[in-house]
Image 1 (cartoon, rainbow, N blue to C red):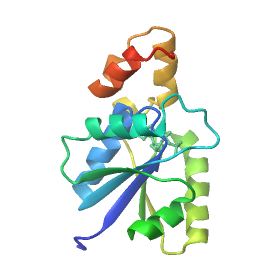
Image 2: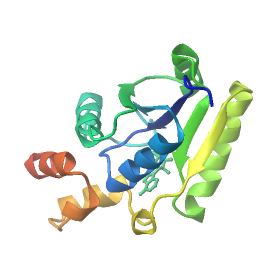
Image 3: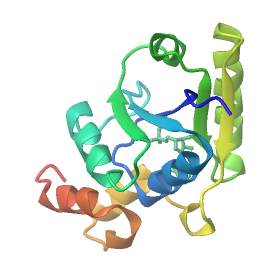
Image 4: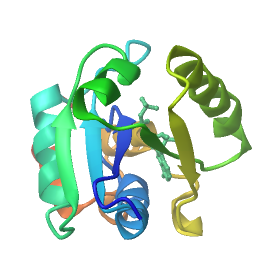
Length: 162
Ligand code: ADP
């Protein structure tokens, strides 16, 4: 095994959920080093700033040793080039994720033929979970404690914007 192999898990993580953490924990067992790379998704309105998302992700993954949290802007392939990685991790929840993920994986490979995308499935209990659902439940004052890591729960509770 290449001990310098870096796997990059990109996403907007607005906010990180237990589904994201489940994928990160699984990746951390497979790869020597995993970089969670947080970015702006132009098709989504973000509730939390990039700095807030990075902070929440750092706190939520501090129990894992081989994880680094970073942020980037622009194309993922350019970021991968910059840090010397070629493996991308994405989570697959249901068939509904597949088309978008498949399109993105092949587009990334079109931009750089070395890129390999590895899809990981979360534990069954997280297959319904998304950041947007968590935000909706929080806005409607529902109980979302079991859906997110504790630092995210505290941040969302204190969030006056919702
Ligand atoms: P993006 O804006 O790039 O879609 P997200 O933060 O929504 O970023 O998701 C990042 C990655 O994590 C995607 O591959 C998505 O499919 C995956 N993901 C999101 N929620 C879950 C979950 N509950 N279980 C497993 N994977 C998930």
